[in-house]
Image (tube, rainbow, N blue to C red; front, side, top):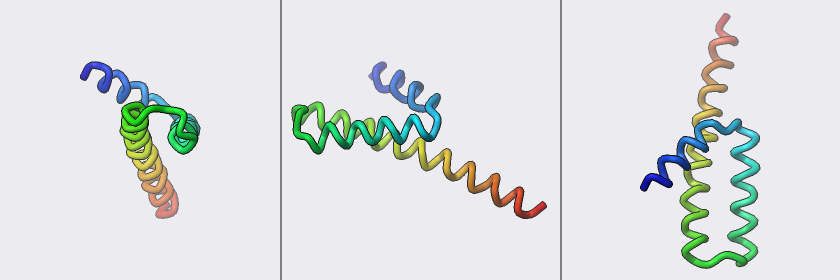
Length: 71
């Protein structure tokens, strides 16, 4: 479980672009079939965390745009 917390901390420090790059790499690995089923599941889980992180970044950006637009 400590790994998961470290992974989440690593993800939370990523920029949007870095997270998308990692997500793209994960998708490529899974699609290539070069990783085991267990590794695929771990990669999928990390990918879902990356997606959640990216959504959070986008929501913050959208909120900021709305605030700027209202000025």
